[in-house]
Length: 169
Image (tube, rainbow, N blue to C red; front, top):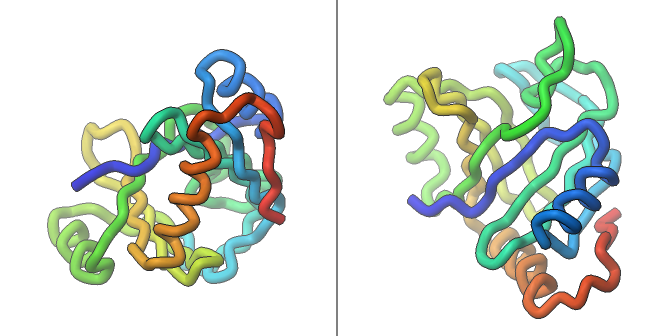
Protein backbone atom coordinates (compact mmCIF):
# COMPACT_ATOMS: atom_id res chain seq x y z
CA UNK A 1 0.00 0.00 0.00
CA UNK A 2 1.66 3.20 -1.18
CA UNK A 3 0.09 6.59 -0.71
CA UNK A 4 0.26 8.75 -3.84
CA UNK A 5 -1.38 11.92 -2.56
CA UNK A 6 -2.18 14.13 0.44
CA UNK A 7 -5.26 16.33 0.00
CA UNK A 8 -6.45 19.51 1.68
CA UNK A 9 -9.74 21.39 1.57
CA UNK A 10 -9.08 25.12 1.26
CA UNK A 11 -11.16 28.30 1.38
CA UNK A 12 -9.57 29.94 -1.68
CA UNK A 13 -7.72 27.78 -4.19
CA UNK A 14 -5.74 30.66 -5.75
CA UNK A 15 -4.46 31.83 -2.36
CA UNK A 16 -3.70 28.24 -1.31
CA UNK A 17 -1.74 27.47 -4.50
CA UNK A 18 0.33 30.63 -4.02
CA UNK A 19 0.98 29.85 -0.33
CA UNK A 20 1.94 26.19 -0.96
CA UNK A 21 4.30 27.33 -3.73
CA UNK A 22 5.88 30.22 -1.83
CA UNK A 23 6.21 28.51 1.55
CA UNK A 24 6.67 24.86 0.58
CA UNK A 25 7.94 24.90 -3.02
CA UNK A 26 5.04 22.84 -4.38
CA UNK A 27 4.34 23.26 -8.07
CA UNK A 28 3.53 23.84 -10.76
CA UNK A 29 -0.16 23.40 -10.10
CA UNK A 30 -2.47 21.68 -12.56
CA UNK A 31 -5.87 23.30 -12.00
CA UNK A 32 -9.19 21.74 -12.92
CA UNK A 33 -11.67 24.50 -12.16
CA UNK A 34 -15.40 24.64 -11.60
CA UNK A 35 -16.61 21.16 -12.45
CA UNK A 36 -19.39 18.94 -11.19
CA UNK A 37 -18.51 15.27 -10.61
CA UNK A 38 -20.11 13.43 -13.57
CA UNK A 39 -20.99 10.27 -11.61
CA UNK A 40 -20.90 11.83 -8.14
CA UNK A 41 -22.40 9.94 -5.24
CA UNK A 42 -22.27 11.25 -1.65
CA UNK A 43 -23.20 8.76 1.06
CA UNK A 44 -24.72 6.57 -1.64
CA UNK A 45 -26.94 9.30 -3.14
CA UNK A 46 -26.40 11.21 -6.40
CA UNK A 47 -24.77 14.59 -5.86
CA UNK A 48 -23.75 17.54 -8.04
CA UNK A 49 -21.62 20.02 -6.05
CA UNK A 50 -19.30 22.46 -7.81
CA UNK A 51 -15.58 21.89 -7.12
CA UNK A 52 -12.17 23.09 -8.26
CA UNK A 53 -9.02 21.12 -7.57
CA UNK A 54 -5.33 21.67 -8.09
CA UNK A 55 -2.58 19.06 -8.08
CA UNK A 56 1.12 19.65 -7.76
CA UNK A 57 4.19 17.78 -6.58
CA UNK A 58 6.94 18.27 -4.08
CA UNK A 59 9.50 15.62 -4.96
CA UNK A 60 7.61 12.30 -5.19
CA UNK A 61 4.66 13.60 -3.17
CA UNK A 62 1.44 14.81 -4.84
CA UNK A 63 -0.47 17.51 -3.03
CA UNK A 64 -4.09 18.15 -3.94
CA UNK A 65 -6.01 21.30 -3.01
CA UNK A 66 -9.82 21.28 -3.19
CA UNK A 67 -12.39 24.04 -2.91
CA UNK A 68 -16.15 23.65 -3.03
CA UNK A 69 -17.92 26.64 -4.57
CA UNK A 70 -21.47 25.92 -3.45
CA UNK A 71 -23.41 24.69 -0.42
CA UNK A 72 -24.47 21.30 -1.78
CA UNK A 73 -23.81 18.67 0.90
CA UNK A 74 -20.67 16.77 -0.11
CA UNK A 75 -17.69 14.83 1.13
CA UNK A 76 -15.87 18.18 1.45
CA UNK A 77 -18.72 20.10 3.09
CA UNK A 78 -21.43 17.98 4.72
CA UNK A 79 -23.46 21.13 5.41
CA UNK A 80 -24.99 22.28 8.65
CA UNK A 81 -22.41 24.54 10.23
CA UNK A 82 -19.21 26.27 9.30
CA UNK A 83 -16.96 24.85 6.63
CA UNK A 84 -13.91 22.94 7.77
CA UNK A 85 -10.55 23.40 6.10
CA UNK A 86 -7.28 21.52 6.28
CA UNK A 87 -6.18 17.94 5.74
CA UNK A 88 -8.93 15.80 4.21
CA UNK A 89 -7.63 12.53 2.74
CA UNK A 90 -4.82 10.36 1.46
CA UNK A 91 -5.04 8.65 -1.92
CA UNK A 92 -3.56 5.49 -3.35
CA UNK A 93 -3.80 3.59 -6.60
CA UNK A 94 -5.80 0.38 -6.63
CA UNK A 95 -4.95 -2.39 -9.07
CA UNK A 96 -8.09 -4.34 -8.11
CA UNK A 97 -10.60 -1.61 -7.28
CA UNK A 98 -13.68 -3.75 -6.60
CA UNK A 99 -11.80 -6.22 -4.40
CA UNK A 100 -10.11 -3.46 -2.40
CA UNK A 101 -13.38 -1.59 -1.86
CA UNK A 102 -15.01 -4.84 -0.70
CA UNK A 103 -12.13 -5.62 1.68
CA UNK A 104 -12.14 -2.14 3.21
CA UNK A 105 -15.91 -2.18 3.61
CA UNK A 106 -15.71 -5.62 5.26
CA UNK A 107 -13.21 -4.06 7.70
CA UNK A 108 -15.73 -1.34 8.64
CA UNK A 109 -14.84 1.46 6.22
CA UNK A 110 -17.84 3.16 4.60
CA UNK A 111 -18.29 4.78 1.20
CA UNK A 112 -18.35 8.55 1.59
CA UNK A 113 -17.98 9.57 -2.07
CA UNK A 114 -17.74 7.97 -5.51
CA UNK A 115 -17.02 9.43 -8.93
CA UNK A 116 -15.44 8.72 -12.30
CA UNK A 117 -12.44 10.73 -13.51
CA UNK A 118 -11.92 12.13 -17.02
CA UNK A 119 -9.40 9.30 -17.55
CA UNK A 120 -12.14 6.72 -16.97
CA UNK A 121 -10.75 5.67 -13.58
CA UNK A 122 -13.19 5.19 -10.75
CA UNK A 123 -12.50 6.83 -7.38
CA UNK A 124 -14.01 6.20 -4.00
CA UNK A 125 -13.43 7.99 -0.72
CA UNK A 126 -13.75 5.62 2.19
CA UNK A 127 -14.24 6.74 5.79
CA UNK A 128 -12.28 4.57 8.25
CA UNK A 129 -14.75 5.32 11.06
CA UNK A 130 -11.80 5.33 13.44
CA UNK A 131 -9.19 7.61 14.92
CA UNK A 132 -7.45 8.16 11.58
CA UNK A 133 -7.56 11.91 10.86
CA UNK A 134 -8.83 11.58 7.30
CA UNK A 135 -10.35 9.43 4.61
CA UNK A 136 -8.73 7.21 2.02
CA UNK A 137 -9.35 7.82 -1.67
CA UNK A 138 -8.90 4.73 -3.83
CA UNK A 139 -8.04 5.64 -7.41
CA UNK A 140 -8.54 2.85 -9.90
CA UNK A 141 -5.22 2.23 -11.63
CA UNK A 142 -5.60 2.66 -15.36
CA UNK A 143 -2.90 3.48 -17.86
CA UNK A 144 -4.61 6.80 -18.61
CA UNK A 145 -4.70 7.87 -14.94
CA UNK A 146 -1.12 6.73 -14.31
CA UNK A 147 -0.03 8.72 -17.38
CA UNK A 148 -1.87 11.83 -16.11
CA UNK A 149 -0.17 11.66 -12.71
CA UNK A 150 3.20 11.04 -14.41
CA UNK A 151 2.66 14.11 -16.63
CA UNK A 152 1.92 16.29 -13.59
CA UNK A 153 4.99 14.89 -11.80
CA UNK A 154 7.27 15.43 -14.81
CA UNK A 155 6.28 19.09 -14.90
CA UNK A 156 7.62 19.51 -11.35
CA UNK A 157 11.06 18.06 -12.04
CA UNK A 158 13.54 20.93 -12.27
CA UNK A 159 10.62 23.36 -12.34
CA UNK A 160 11.98 26.92 -12.54
CA UNK A 161 8.93 28.63 -11.04
CA UNK A 162 7.53 29.80 -14.37
CA UNK A 163 3.88 29.23 -15.24
CA UNK A 164 2.92 28.27 -11.66
CA UNK A 165 -0.68 27.43 -12.59
CA UNK A 166 -1.54 25.26 -15.60
CA UNK A 167 -5.22 25.03 -16.39
CA UNK A 168 -6.77 21.69 -17.34
CA UNK A 169 -10.11 23.20 -18.31
